[in-house]
Image (cartoon, rainbow, N blue to C red):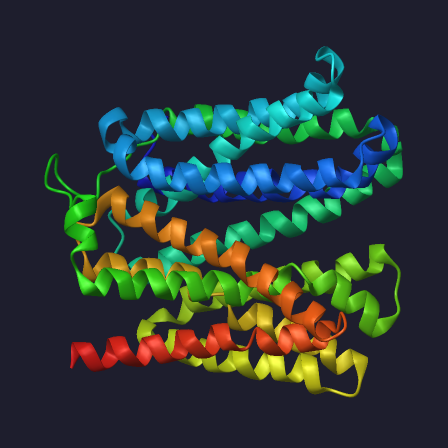
Length: 391
């Protein structure tokens, strides 16, 4: 069977589902790790830090080495590393003398794979010969949301059906997905965004003022999204007084479903709504969502605000990617790598600042989320600056 660029896009969808598995499977197993291996909470927390720091490092370094090695080689390696890390969570703790060292090794492997996937998949789809680039990018990123929901629901169902002691089997089952997709990517056609030696280098990109504007947009997009997403479960539990399992479904899952829906809807109606207008409106709607979540006297309405926030941030990340790529047609992989770096910085800094703000007001999560409104407000303001600059 001859594979065409439609198959490239399908493989890219599976790539973003793989990234969702890499980022969300381990947190579902943290309490199991703690109970079965006797690990203290500080060591488990460090696993999150290692995953995040390595992905940031990969974002930074890939701007230099991806074009030299080749996109196909890197994207196949990314999936193989992701599969090795997921399966390694099951195997390494038993093989290593220290179970924690084994877990840490698995996290390092899948973090490198996940970081490469984040950098590579978007430019691969951008380079495909499609007419509606913004729509294709928005639909692509919706699969990360569907992957997140699938990981939570399927993993929770598996552990409930077969018992928590079967978690190594669960890790190995999820590892099949990236391994199969590595074989898929080895065969599909992959185009390049720029001709050889014609892409913009780091120095040329950093010399352009518009690049720093796009980088700031990515930071605020990541912060707007994760400031609510990372605290959604705790917010649902505290606001509604439900159990953690219900809080996970009512918080992060509800958020992800509406975020994915926004991306899918924009992919369908992109021709009717200019991208810059959509980004500005999304920033304003996100401020309204945070206000609704924080100020509503009714818990269910606060939860609706959480869901509305997921809907409002849906197109921010893929939208900034598309806007920047259109502005810098020679940006190439370096542009996407640096924008991913900015987005990850926002994803890390947003939830952290919410926690610090909440702590400053007596561990008031509402106060922390009220502070988070500054992120979407800044994004809407930056969109206005870009619009004025174009004129």
